[in-house]
Image (cartoon, rainbow, N blue to C red; front, side, top):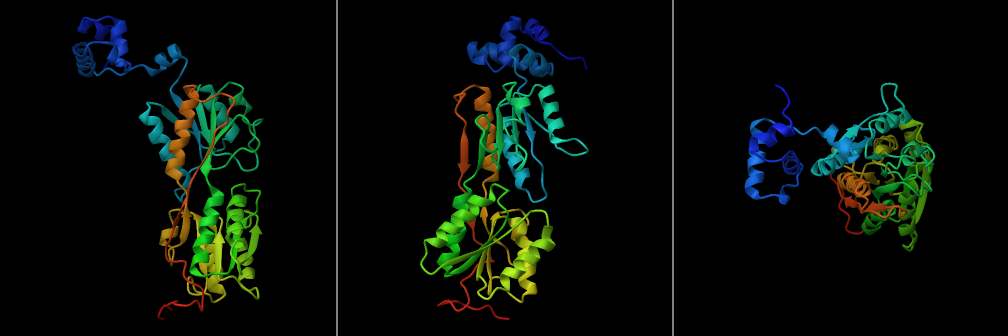
Length: 350
């Protein structure tokens, strides 16, 4: 079927091409209701679809936003992507999602998006590599950039949406302290992963404010994987004054904690309580299900999309970098209980 153009619709309706263009371009309020109805009816009958490429050339906008996030099996970045998608589609913007896979580097994919003249860019910053300089190909072309979850350090040109990580650590500590735990610990990747530090600091500060409470810590690099994590956590659990509760700065470490506890003959939560961070999809299926701090991933995606659209529409002051952190919430499940010997504690049979 041949494409129908505005001139044909205008001729059939007895209106000018300019009038048809306004009505089909969502500016029908400029014309009489009966004219709007007639043009829309004819456009539907002729199965008209707008040429957005031509419209982009005329307006200087493509109404596209590049999105560079690495999807995961646990639903974290995938849920952020859904939030971005829904907010952009609601404003008639098209997300173009590219992955640094199949031999393509992140830099190459960013260049592909630049070549397609995206109006803005949303990405999850690389913990170790991203900077204003690395993103200069976008910034020098005045393409607004918003990062999610991980902030580009020291930037004065990149907006950010993430989680109030220190509040999440505090929520975890307050929950364990309220249950009666006084010997606690946090287990985290080392602080080269920038989100980890505020989570642990928030946890540690809350513990320090509680008389008689002590806090140990285990830091390890991300690289060793689960076996290395199990060994490090096992050493913590064999210490003379082992903690009765552990805060994990990332849910990803939870399987290692559960394995280490079993190897040391400890039951969760009877002998050891555990709290994670993120509320990844698998943690509710663990035995017992993990108490965790839930990050507002969908809302992060939505806020990032709204922020990039505000930049595109020039509704945000150019020199002012926006940094928004959304509040997490504690989700209590079966991995936390009062410590052994606590007054009123009920032991599980068997």
